[in-house]
Image 1 (cartoon, rainbow, N blue to C red):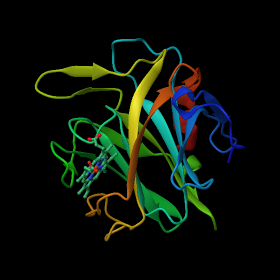
Image 2: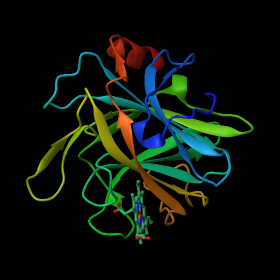
Image 3: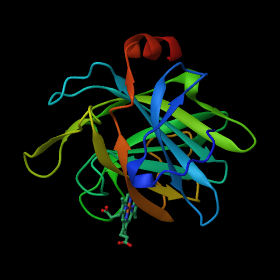
Length: 206
Ligand code: HEM
């Protein structure tokens, strides 16, 4: 884990160089209690990544062992965008793409695909983490035919949700999940998330 930082969360530009996977991630530490507990949200993208076209992203989420599931909303709200949900499953982790049109349980979403990267997925006594490549998380339809593309050279507003309760079928990516205990928004800096060796690192950690 990184040291706590004093910069304002909405202006987060932390960079985390992951010794496990070799990726350079831009990172946001999402506070989940009034104390110092946070969930690290890390994003790595290819460099260069052309603007206006889709590009893959690698996301790494590091959560306290007490977290049941963590979700990241790539469009910055619960509805009408890809929701990436992950949780611990023994020493490994399970990830699942979902989507919702209302504030009710999201359903499976096939518009984005995930590849869990073993090199960055683990559990210890205090934290669990997953690392996954997403194809379809940086460009997606919102409502109707409206397409949103995340800016690889600036900040994008994302949202997260977290639940203390574990999914009831942790081995299954289609497991039911309970409603979250907390959600929030942040501006994630993609400009500092670039990795020239992106494809090699994906292959190396797969
Ligand atoms: C069973 C699953 C879920 C249920 C029943 C559920 C239900 C709800 C409800 C009722 C609200 C409104 C709460 C309020 O206004 O105080 C809400 C808001 C929200 N939820 Fe969920 N949710 C679920 C899963 C998720 C997941 C997987 C994400 C992924 C990130 C998510 C992200 C959000 C966000 C960001 C909000 C804030 C409002 C918005 O931006 O749309 N939720 N949810």
